[in-house]
Every structure is written in structure tokens, then in C-alpha cells.
Length: 226
Image 1: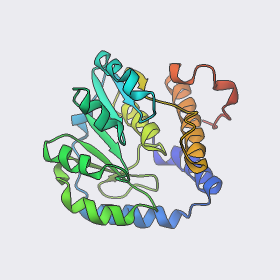
Image 2: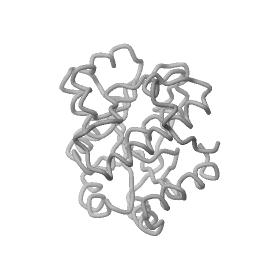
Image 3: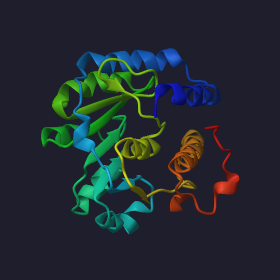
Image 4: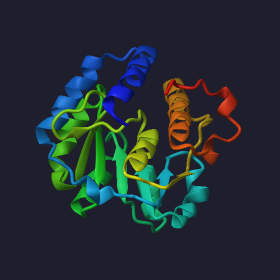
């Protein structure tokens, strides 16, 4: 997704949450200091099925579904659950807020990590970026991209993983470990999950595809103008 397309969606998210754009831009600039251009061909998924793995409570029960995919893009702590089940993650999508050690270990082993900057995680970026092997870091922002910091669309780690898979040519997206009605999350997280659903509904329309993860809830989703 081009930033010109993403920007009005991004502005709507900022208004809804009351986030200042300057915070995201500051975080992006912190990330840009260490970011190096990433070889995007490493993530080429053309013609492949990508498992987009979320960290919902259903994941331990259904993690073995990732075996049906050609690639695994895992968000947040889902990367640890996938690894514990014996599967290799192809891309770890994170804002470093829960398991930054996983980002360190994966980049150390040569696995790509999409490390995301936003207004609330500048201290985490400053602490953990020096510990990552930058050759394996795909730096991302939700603000305007600069230099080697990219923006392919998406807001939460999970839906950002889906937008990344789409960007890199995935023929099919399979959603594993997604729970939009997780009663254990905070009100703020529940609101983020509603936005994630809206963004996935937009993505499926753009792909002319129907994501099973949205079945039974599309009537509740306020569509985003494409």
C-alpha cells in the first residue's frame, strides 16, 4: 500500500485514539538512525500461502494449522508459541513491547524481524535496536516512511503482518490465532482489535478475497473507504 493511500486511514486512527502524529514521527526518526535498507526480495511470497499468526488465546489450540502454509508471519508473542510448537517463523512482526528478546534472538539467527516504531515505544527502540542484527531488521513506521524505514500499511502487529504478506505477493492469507473478542484484553486493546478487523476487511476487498477470520462479523464492521 502506498503511503498516499494509507495516510487518510492513518489520520482517522490518530483522531480516534487521540494520538499525536509527532510522536510517531519522533519514533520513526529514532528507528531511522540505525535502520539499513532491507532486501525486500527475501520476503517474496509470490504465489505462496502465508500464515498470519496472531497472539490470541486460541493460538495454542490451532497453532499446527501453520503447517499448511508456505510461510509464517507471526505477530508479537505468537512468534514464541509458533517456535515452541516446532515451526520456523519467516517474519516476526513486533513493536518490541512484549518479547524483545525474541527479536534479538531471531535476528541473531538470520531471521527477518519487522521492527515497528510508534509514539509509545521510543524507550524500547533505544534500548533494543542496538541489540538487534540490523542486517535482518525491516524497519517500519505508521507515519510517512523515510530513508530505510518503510510503511506498508497496518496498525497493530497482527494486521500489519497481513499487510506485509499482501505487499510481498502472497496468493492466500491464512489467519491463525486471531481472537477479536478476547475478554482478557483492556478496553484500549479491544478498540485496537476493532481497528484491526476494519483494516482486514479493507484488505480483503482490495485483494478480492474473503478471509475466514472475518466470517460472521462483517455486518458489525464499519468499512474503511478504499
